[in-house]
Image (cartoon, rainbow, N blue to C red; front, side, top):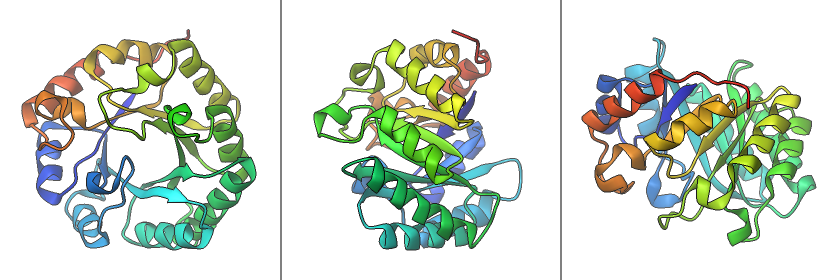
Length: 242
């Protein structure tokens, strides 16, 4: 199970890199759960850390149904050299809109590279804001040709992944995704104590930020010793069948 950690700056990326992780996920927390970071910051992180063992992920934002805008964002992030692109399907009304938007993101990404992992990201707390449910998310991701699917939480008010969905529901999400040969990422106030459950249902990637910030406050800076503690715990686990 890979660990994805989300720094917001080159400085935080240095901290995470020093402590070690599998994927550096560049985002802008000021613009939401999957807020897009400035391209010059993404480019600088890629130049500093890309091309080695470190993989670089970029968020495209919590998106509305504007496929052209999403496609242009994807082209820009792909051109900066990211290995993963995550598109947040926020104000997306239904399967048709989700599929069309992700098809646009995928097509724009493939103009740059066939190797970039395109991730359709939805929200485990979809019931709180009338968002896309996780079953529809998986179907749209698969039918649009995405490589991976992800659940995070949109509303950052102390409630996390396991407050939004039960372990059984998360296991169903993972199973559905695997049936379509999609990689699966899970995030949303994930803590060390959640790792065993996430590994048990076959999660491929776990995404964090708050867990490596003081007092689990994602608005605070990432701390190297907390990254080391989290990575040590994650290294002890391997995905096992439910």
